[in-house]
Image (cartoon, rainbow, N blue to C red; front, side):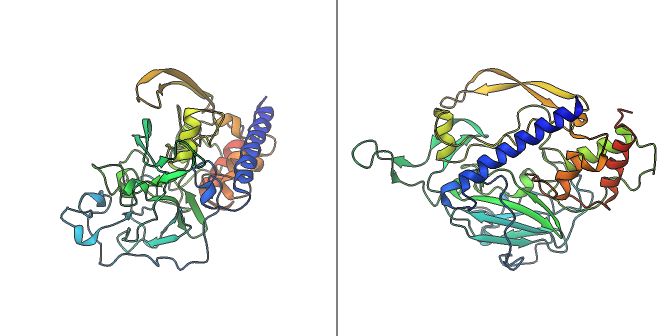
Length: 369
């Protein structure tokens, strides 16, 4: 039964990958600037790391929201940051990490690269280009309001009449990656710098801090625990801490999908036979539970934003992603080493302590002990 679940998961992943790559025709352009179509986009290369680092020393207030001060009209407006944040050693935020790189690609294909200083901070005043088909949302769900205008009649019906205001920071959309050596973690969403009038500059620290909802911004090969036994691995003591550190917040219970950011996703929300859907980035896998989970999640009306009902979101658990006959072939390990497509990036190699602990636990039967 476990092998069958693994095979089904592989088929689903391959099918979804084919859809995304087919839609993008192997090339990432303005025509496929959505979270779904950019899900498997490789990290950009060929640029100079840190080429867009902002001026100043920036050794203060690690982990705090830089956008509070460094925005128009605020105390730090002389240094108006388009993006900023803090790089950590791990998701728990147990220490700051110098040298990590944050890479952004905007709608026009421009690459913006920032590197963390000795305090772990990074920032840039370089603005991503404006996405003309931007849509405003309320915390990621309805009401959805197009910020652009289309021709409603005539030979130009359905084409762009007025683009979204390029001075509105909501329209400064980007796809991002976090890189530290070989380890790369992509941002699943195509997101905007601004979040409305109350948050015209959303730094990474708004969500990605040690105590934030998504944990610290990090990537690397540091082990989760100081050490692991060579045998007798415990799911509760050794394996779950790794999964909690490395696999959340993507593989968690409940609804896990990217926000709606532009016209293709808006069109699909209004009529599912058109456009591009938002990306469900957990692929139906909840690695925070052993058996799997079923959670009731609210359904929102796309126009009014009102809750219209609930849907049951059911996901497979950790036991569905391991291969007892061949532990090294477990999808949990294959995907995270770069040996198979993984929207969450590359975490480690086969010599990493976390990797070896999981492999040993699977070899011992992947017990819930």
